[in-house]
Image 1 (cartoon, rainbow, N blue to C red):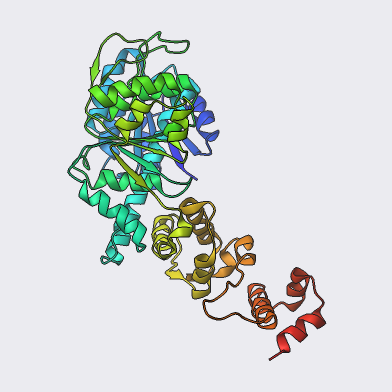
Image 2 (image 1 turned 180 degrees about the horizontal axis):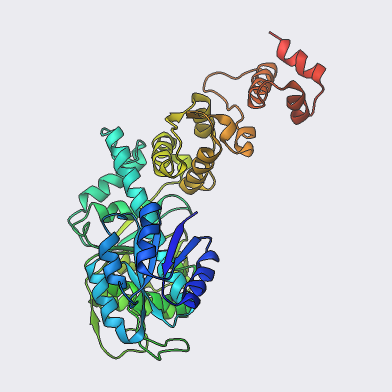
Length: 442
């Protein structure tokens, strides 16, 4: 669970932000002045620090200056009244992540907070990635399969390019991670990397998030707000589920991709940017173009380079390095000293088809870390469904007899239940006597 501390001299503001963040599953602490907040921050670790800009005594910027060395992993967001928006922009240039306007709507709190936590997750992923590279420098990133080595070779070949890229492949195949690798190996690696999922917001919210809006542009637009395209200037913007973008926004996006310019929602001032776009989809875009649901001209502008990410079931060699990567990624927050995977555990993972692809593997590893009590991940920490589905497959050149197959399968189920014959027999739907006979046969 993420932890946040909210600092504001108005208790009502603290409680309002608390209610919104707790609705996002975040554990929230509050303080009504900077001095008390500093003491809490020194003694605890917070993912988010949300502070009012103007407070009696030490203000938000002074608080930021005083804790940025002691809490380098915390993401700092300020709350500011409309009249001090320029101060908020200056604060962002100084290193503060984002701002929340006052008074605020729930979405004006949720959206920057969600972006901040996504950034924290990306940073954690990058740390794990660097750790993994350090463990096995012979393996480029997380790829041992030939298909993924080809993908990484493509990325290496275009590291000096700013061309648009379209990532395709099944849901959960790892398109987000590939987008991060493209950015981190490009000339823009020290610039912003921002991401948005086009399928999770309404058309109005998506337009506002991408292009920003002017005050009064629509109901609830009580102040001017820059969008992600503007914030990502000189960096990279990753547009996940691009096929879900409404046609009206596709036309606006095309102008940005082609000319590097756009208008905020409700705006009349032309804004120029230099942004590299990486888009991703799990849908057949050519089919959507034929059906009139996706603009052909936008497709060709984004698809200067098309990279297909194969499903995990077609690149089993990547299961081991990916498992190690996810272990490194999620282990720090568990405070456990797990060193790797039992052979039986990895055998089960290697035989599984992963319909949910890389995302499913990550979930399995994260769950196993939570459940595991030993120094290695054992089969008992894997989901029961995966263990039950771990059925023997045919070996080339040798067909086993039914008796051989049955005995080996029963032995695996027995091992899965820790040698408990009663539970094994019950699971297999046979009597203990039948189980004994199967196991006794030579």
